[in-house]
Image 1 (cartoon, one colour):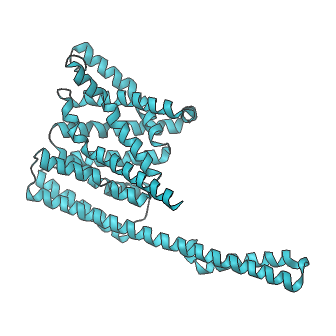
Image 2: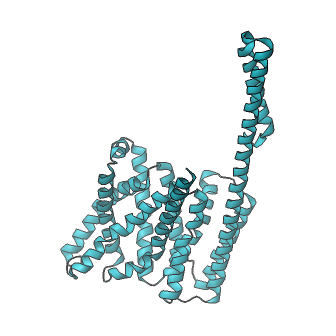
Length: 354
């Protein structure tokens, strides 16, 4: 059993590395699609993603959710909002990469956890721990430093961070699986995207056919580039703890940042390094706090389990002694009393369990 669990954990880790690795290396792919513009690439991504996800769902035979979704107007509205926000996110990211702004794009995914926390406070009225407040403050200072360094707000980063944080918030409320959610979102995106591609073709501006079979296949591959990391992520999410996934998520922006600096040769003046250093400090604080909180929660659960086992053993002993001392006629009453004492004992020993 232990060997099987270790094997599952190893498979989960490999899938997690694969998912975030592919997301991190995707800046290498979008430039291959030139001379297609960002909007044409985005439209192809929507169209071909639906085709790929539909094939996956056919293989898995997972279609029952679609009928249920169609009968829930509120969920459909949320899916539409998710489709709109991820459209903005995809479009800005593709444009940023193909205009040589990979470093600023990577910053968006570095600050995304901070923006998610800020949204939680402002919209969901969540309460932050002191370390989380410190991290948010450091992140805000980083944006100010980068604004001074760029001579303007890092709007690409902010747009990517806020759109993805909003997308995550909506998906949490929708509560659909990753593949199913992508299928629903791309189904909403499909007709506008297809209409745009047909319009481009009618004007003679489409690149899907005139630039050869190789280029057409690359555009079609946008569906795989979108769906494959998501499938790997889904396989990882059910096999490894969320704390591990939380650490793995930083792989993608790290790879993007390194590609921007080392491969694409983007400039990194001192003020930009200072801004990124502050962002990394904020993320380090968040990670430390999350790991510490998870460790404390795990210890409390272990203490609760130990206390429950102890009380259970005492209850069994009391029942046995009662049966031997007063006879079988009063066992039921004695057991009821022992159970009542047991509950009080668990609550007294683990007050935080409430």
